Image (cartoon, rainbow, N blue to C red; front, side):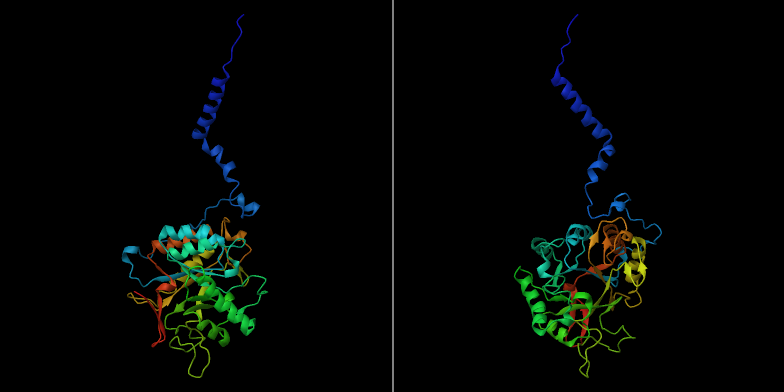
Length: 345
């Protein structure tokens, strides 16, 4: 009886070939195992759900396409607090559609946990995005949960002026400021301090920002954007109290998911229609974002200002498909004689 002789090199080669072939023919068997290590900020139960946003019930039919754009439908996009997710998740979407945005950062939070690095912020600046100041210490222990209304004169001066210098030290020359929590528009001391160093400041909430500051009939009878009225009192809206609409899915007893927030987003955009006609822009929605999260739906988030990546992508696609003109504060000018805002050509 002959003794069998095994060629182990041939056997090993055959096994490797079989495994490789199965990967090419049946890749889905192996991919879920590989993908399960990603998306670490999604709750456990969310990982078991689909990550695709479902907006089938929302009317997404374009009002008009880009070819028919009369440039009277405009939007400004802002990001607050310099979260890392803004660079990791939001920037690729902005790049995809060619949009530029405004990023307001707090100097002493840059490079800390879950926040952008200086290199990333400088890259945004180089690519034409606006980088603005949001104080030196907002959100850190140094400010001790205080807002600008509750700082000493010296501390207020430091937070406002040094944050401008901090950005300048990194090659970023900004003239734009964002007031933490948007709650100092009735404080003359804060307004005057900001005015010494910046040309514009976000400092309030509203559905729309009116270029002549004359759209808040229930709150103000002003007809232009001067900072002080004739009797010396602060005006409701001015160049240091620009008002934005913040994406908030929680609050006032409400809890909205992705589809509901998308509907609110579309309604917010379309609220400008009655003010902007025949190529003339009188009102602009300023949409404020904060963290971009990878949850399947906002119902998994307990942070009111979160926006899911799926929702953000759907909103930017809506802007693109409907021919909206996305501008930044670089494009927003101010006429010192007429005391009104205008869009630069």
